[in-house]
Length: 134
Image: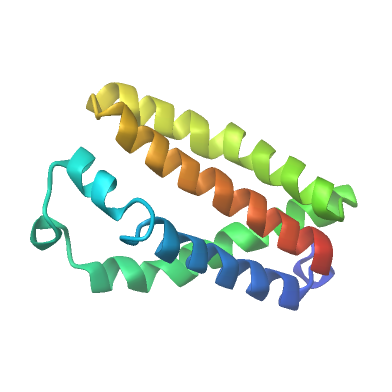
């Protein structure tokens, strides 16, 4: 695949959208409190948030590049294609991986749904951005 075939602006915009969704999703406005409760931890017991936040731009950038390459290679554009391919990538990789982790780690169902819901919304909205801008 040729990286020059994807739109830099689409990838950057999707990266920003992905980071924004994560910040909102795990904030007190949405799911921070039930997420912490399901983890059984306090904010002080979590790992260094600075380290985790430093990894986020790279992770979101890689996700955006992969979605852009997939959608570009398939000639997929528009909102519908973004929803479809964001969901396909989510179901094929994120959902399947998280189901295994959920089952092996015996985590609370609410934690699974908060985390996997975040990834679905993120992938779909990133797909939409790429579908509209690429």
